[in-house]
Image 1 (cartoon, rainbow, N blue to C red):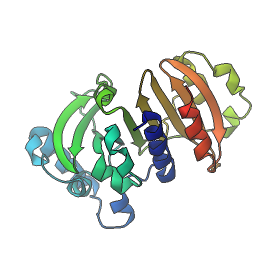
Image 2 (cartoon, helix red, strand yellow):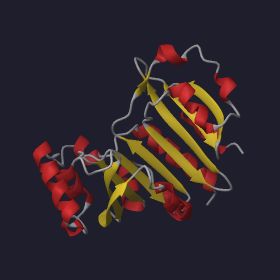
Image 3 (cartoon, one colour):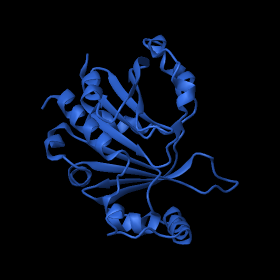
Length: 240
């Protein structure tokens, strides 16, 4: 299996679903909990991880609600099995991140981290996600897609007159000059000879998206794409 072909398929998958990672919720087969239930479950799990270990994904959604961040990661050999989000749940594994309501003793980056394998919770950790490199685990699986529930929309007026070519070849830290501190809707990573990434941002009052491509620590391309540009985005990621 060609890793670049695999990435292309996952990018298409993420764009088609644009953050709608929980089809059970969309189809009303799972009822999301109220805030009291969420906090009660969070407290139980923080005190005793066994409360949620070995539970399935539907149980997690019903008791903790939709995660702040969902990551699909998979081995290359499984990629041909994935044609939908449901397939991703069955053929890939998931990392779920729930940001905590803060107490005075907790870091502002405190979160509950769940890893699901074959749709079942296998690992539960309380983490400071600002100090945890969640990507370290992905080098074995070679690819990952992150879907962010609470994404921001970039102000069109602030970007429409920017010359994006000025950002090609510059250090990734300069991305703040393009998007500020806005959170993307989703991103996709591939780990080959170099770490390659595309971050996709919603634009206010527009169906278009802003895409920032990078390779290692360098921005390689920035541009605005419409919803018909899936193949173009894919092809950019496939370039060497």
